[in-house]
Image 1 (cartoon, helix red, strand yellow):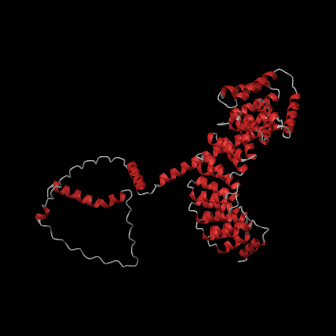
Image 2: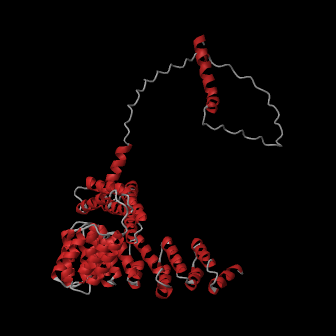
Image 3: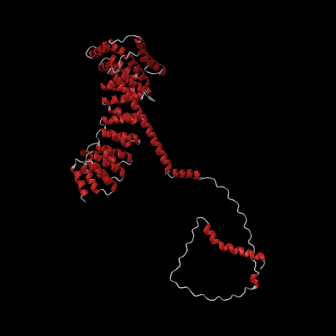
Length: 500
């Protein structure tokens, strides 16, 4: 065997022997554990070695043929990232199959929650503005001028306020009464400059003239007595010849009188059977004055809700796009008992806010059957929620029980259960217990438990607790019963648990 052959053979044998060591050294390859020696086995005596015969020369001169080198494997091209395309394809396939993907559903739900939260914030902000404006009006009637200024300032400073022009007018009016004519002029001029198309513009110009006349003069307390005398005179006109007083009242409505005085003038006009008085009141209600006076005229038309007055209100409703005016007309229809026109608005009004207002008014008018018919035809969840509220106001427990047991929408079922809980245990206690027995959703069962607790209905709670096998619901029941310390039924059941 030549030197090259011996060297090659030695290298191959070394590589073969080194394979287990190399495998053990590689990370992630577990070592084979040693097999423990079996104790107690005696040593086998050594067998004498026999000499092996020498290998034949042919084997010793054998040379292993050289292994050809493998061709170099080219690198695979880098695969493009197709995860986004696969996700889009998956979503498209899901949409074709009618199954919305989880991510799209979650995003849609999140967007819906954000939209609802934004609507709630806008509604709450508008309510705060309306409350501040109303407090300002009440302060004017009490002649609490400083409080009126503060209230109207909150209205003018509020974001997205729709009553800035009206608040600026009454703020200037109150400042003039406080003999702060400079500030009053600033407010009224701000109104004229910022709102050149406002319906308060003519009132503002008249007030500006009055403030300028009072500027630099000493306080004149006789103004207050003049106001009082005018109020007394208007009250007297209710029993005298209204036709003779109509021109005077019309002039008063066009001037800078206080809200209280203008309201009393409208009241006199509404009481009158004079054609001229009705003509003036109708003109004001159609927008012939500032919005505050218009709303008050609409209110009086509803209070004295004759057929002619209701026809006038319907005409105004159909000819305006002002949501506040329409809302006041709906309230006037409710005061006048005009259920048909309120129902028509609830069914056909395009503005969701006004539809919901009409539904609430139907509840106050006791329109149970009309509301139930609407609920069965309605598809908008927000409107259905308002109908449930109206049914609750109307005391319609039977329909609410139907919704709580048959409605497919869990949110509406929950709302019905909540209303039933506040309607008294004599009226709805047994129905709530029956709903609990048939209900499969734990959240609604908890609402039933809470409703029975609100009703102070320990008998139903104990009866349910005896049959309940769900540990979490059982704890909820016992927790509510533990708070009803004045109930013998509840305390006896708790002692029963303790004695087990």
